[in-house]
Image (cartoon, rainbow, N blue to C red; front, top):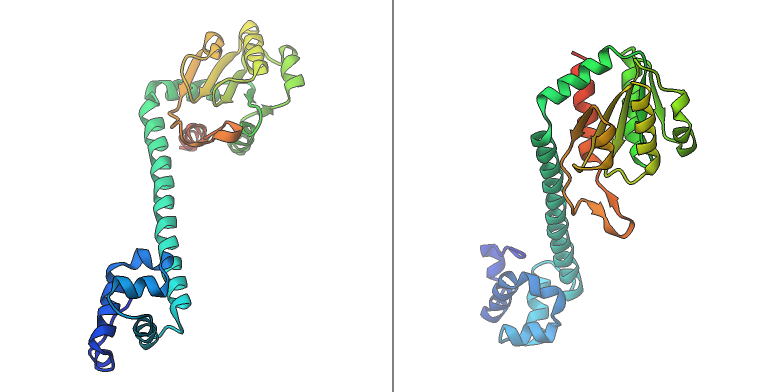
Length: 245
């Protein structure tokens, strides 16, 4: 309700002024787009009556009342949008958790624990997840290194050894250097683990294990084709949390 009228305030109003207030409360969403003349016509009163009623309710005029209503409606709309964003994030989390296979996670953990070195590969903004994963592993005492430069990836065959683990973070495997590094690692006998948001990528051909996370299509900036990386965050968080036990 926009305007609450006390019994004391009602005594200062005429019946036509009260009918204006009733109309305003019943049509609150229309107020920002209505002129004082339109409100008068809709409430079967006059512009002067509308103006008096508004002032008796504490507003300096119709402009102040419109501003208050607009601010309130904008807040409601903004709150609805925020809730939609929350729901998208919840959906992504649920899809990722549902897609994760417990046996696969445990096998990844075993490979990490018995590795000589851990190479974490990622490109673009996904490298931020790789950096955080590297930092957490280093805090836990593992020899972890991030490779995010395409030139280094092209020459990564010189780096990998048999007892190494190569973990690749990618949303949809759109970078050819990642596949090249995976092939090099496989040729050297290293364990290759792919953490990806979509199934069936060419990386799986070179991977000993594939950890898949769900991804909701509308969680992206379409203009720049930036997809959500929340599933990859959940995968890395799950691995780190287990290693901390």
